[in-house]
Every structure is written in structure tokens, then in C-alpha cells.
Image (cartoon, rainbow over all chains, first blue to last red; front, side, top):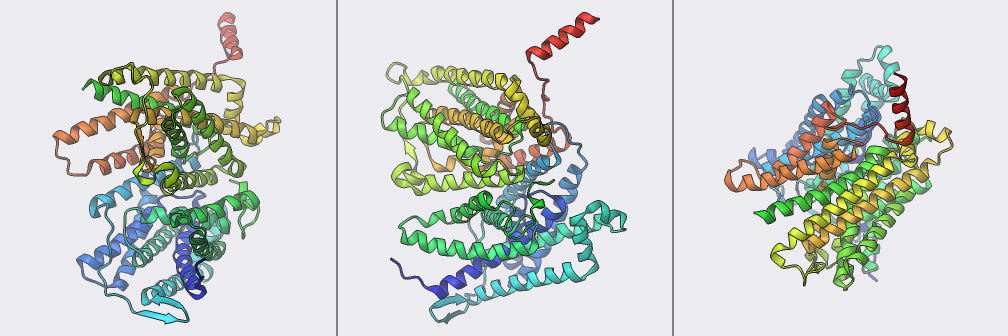
Length: 305
Length: 308
């Protein structure tokens, strides 16, 4: 029996949850407008991390410049994805065999392949690290954490707050929520829904890119960075109730805690810790059996559409 | 050279079976199975493990079909009542978890080192250098059997219910069809066929390891099905041939031409473009879906012919 270091478990869980929260929010934003789970989001995470790496490696700039470039670059990539692929598929008539949902799902996989393997072509398949100074290490009770951990947690919370303020108090934010709820009604109320959709894609891609950057700082960069986060982020999104912004945030921290507690459990049960991704997946399955509408969602989101 | 072609044909046959099985699920029932590789892997590992314990080709075949069908049944329980996008998310995760299982449970699967030395059937009768001449027809017999079974199924009353679920779930439910049961059966049929493919695959390679079962394999099968034609069984075989020809062509070309881009990346990027372009410009594929052939439709066609 390994002794459980509770303060450390707490810090690790918050850290996992912070990155997941951003990943899940990015998915949620687009899901609410487009009504499909977008597999390309994995590549927005990866691209964000690599663009920060590029700024860091080739321009010699630090983490702050990297964070900005990750947000902007992935946001732009998301807008390009929508413009070149997904906006075109919206007009494809649904024949008997394919619907809008299926064709978007399939195209999102295809686009993901293109991005992931272009990244792999440019930067290689091997893992990379940011070229930055070693962080300061703090100890608090029995928890050890670095200044990077603090930056990750705080910047994640800051970005979530900014998004919250933006969606709640600005006109554009209100238009986004209106368009998510009812695009046709918003259009006839005079909302420029095209502008709204582009903004959503930019914000969503940017948030994913930033999450990918944080993940890259926390661990390392690889072309599979985003894909590995994405599958867990999907579990988060379903746990929170697909399309629920605040549900996603709470669910991210729940999954963060369960995952880290699960890893301790795996060690104590003498099971390989490579099963870590399976923990979130088990929660996903349990949720689908007992509460498929998610923790914080209305029942109408479950089967409609 | 002849072995290279035979090897390619075996691959096309195995993947043809996989594309047919995916077509039953995704094409006819609209089950977005993003974890096809999991059921393929279950079949492959079941056959490999039993063959290494000394069981013969037929016993392992039955076991592979059974285990894959069981996997299909288990995954259907929590997911089939939900919308197709949930199903896609769960199956893609299931495929990844299964790969983790193959890697982690080294006592059973030998971990990342994989399982070598799977014995070939009738290896003492057929000379090794001509073995593929024997094995290629075997694979094609299975492919043909799967083709016949699949066409029978989709033209049967059962298959027409599957199509009705695809077209309009609510309407089908209002006619008293138990949608959940039909979807489960569709998934079980598709998974058993994937099990057959896995079985043939492990005997052909005589070695399997977890890194053969990456998610990209699932989407290669999707590409085959989409190119050939969604909800067209012949199309799936055509799609498998096209994608296999492309992949083999690439492997030859890269030896002679110095590509500016890594062949693996190039291959997957091309698959990505194919998926997107077909979805945009030809979602029905090269051979679109055919009308149901049944006694009643035949009578109707003959009837109109006589009226004229």
C-alpha cells in the first residue's frame, strides 16, 4: 500500500482539470453552434503547442509570446477549417446515406489527418521540449509543484473567466449564445450569424491552442498531443452535458480528480498506470448508462437534433 | 513479384471484408463505428492466442467470430440508445482502450513485442514458397461468403428495417420495430465479420502486435467504404481494391522516386483529402446505393413491364 500524499493529489488534479477545462470549453463552443463533435479540435491543441514552440525556438521569445501565438495561430486554423471545409458541408443536401452530421464527422476526421501529419512532416514524430529555464520549485505541506504548474492553473482560470465575461456581458457574446440556442431566430432578429460563427470558431480554436500550449509546457510536444487530450475531453464534455459551458468546467475538474485518484488506485492495485486514459473512459461509459444527458444538461439536449 | 501481388490481394480481401462489415453498420444502419479496429483486433488476437496454444484454423475462426461478436454486443449496451455522435466518441475511445489493453496485459499478449510464430494451417503439406498461392483463394472464399451474406442481409426484410432506421428512426419505431434490437444485431453482424477479417489477418502475417491497431486503420476502412459507395456492398470491395492499390503503388514509388515528403505522412494526408472531397462532392461514393432487391420489388418490376 503506497501512502497517499493528499496535498500532492490535490495539486495534480487541479492541474489536470485546468488543461481539460480549456479543451472541453473549446469543444463545447463549436458543438453548441455546429451540433457535432469536432475531431479536428485535437489538431488545434497540437498546432497551438507547436506554434508556441516555433516562436520559442526560432524567435527566441518566452512563454508569454508563446501563449499569445498559440491562441492566435490555432484560432486562425479553426477559422480556415470552417471556411474551407465545414461551411461547405452545411449546404450539402442530405441524401439517404449521409446526413449533415455524418458528413461533418467524417470530414473532421479527414481534416484532422491532414493537419496532424502536416505537423509531423514539419516538426517530426519525435517528442520536443520548450527551450525555457527550469522552473522554480515550491513545497507546501507535502505537495511539490513548480512555478509552471502555478502559471498553468492561473492562466487557465483567467482564460475561463475572460470567456465567461465575454459570453455574458458583451454584445457579441450574447449574440453567440443566441445563435447557439436558435440560429434562425437570431438571424431574423438581425444578428449577423456568419460573424458569430467565425468568432465562435476563432475562440474555440484559440482556447484549444492555448490548452495545447499549457499541455506542452506541462509535459512535452508530440503530434499526438491533441489526440490524447481530445478523447478525455470528450468524456468531460459528455459528463458535463454536451453543449453546457459551465458543466464542462465542473466536469473537467471532476475528471481531473478521478483520474489522479484512479492512478493512485492503479498503483495500489498493482495495475499498469498506462491504463490512465481508461479511467476517464470508464466514467464516460457509466455516465452513458445512468445519466446520458450529463450532469448539468437538460434532457432535451440528449436525443434531439 | 508474384508474392507481392498475392500479398496485396490478401490485404485487399481482408480489408474488403472489413469495409463490408462497416458498411452494414454505418452504411445501412448509420452506426458511426469509429472503433472498427477494436473488433478487428479482438478477432486477430483471439485467433493468434488460440493458434499459438495449438488449436486449429476452424476452431480459432469460430472463437474469433464469437469474441468479436461479444465485443460488439458489449459496446452496444451503453451506447445504442444514444445519438450517432455519442456512438462515434465511445467507439473511438474503446478502440484506444483496447490497444492499451494489448500493450499493458503482457502476460496474455506479450505487450508491445507482440505475438510471433502463429502457425499456418496445412503448412506441412503446402511448400512455403507457394503458400500465398494457396492462402489467397482462401481469403477470397471468405470475402465472397461475406459478400453473399451481406447482400442477402441488406435485401432481406431485416435489412429493410435497418434502412428504415437509417432514414427515419421515429417512423420505424412507430411501426412497432424495436430499434435497439435491430441496431444491436447490425453491430453484432458487423463485428463478427470484422472478427473473420482479424482471423485471416493474423494467420497471414503470423505475427501481430498492438501497433497494428492504431485508430488510423479504422479510418482507412472508412475511406474504402466511402470511396466505393456508402450502402453498396460491391462498392466496399472496389474501395478496398482502390485504397490497397494506392498504398502498394506508394510503397513501390517511394523506392524509385525521392519524395519530398515522408511516405507515411503523405499516405495519411491523401486519405484525409479523399474523405473530405468525397463528403463534399460525391457523398454517395463511386457506386451509389442500389434499390432493394426482393421478391416483391421484382414482382412490381415485372408487373409494370407486363402492363406496358
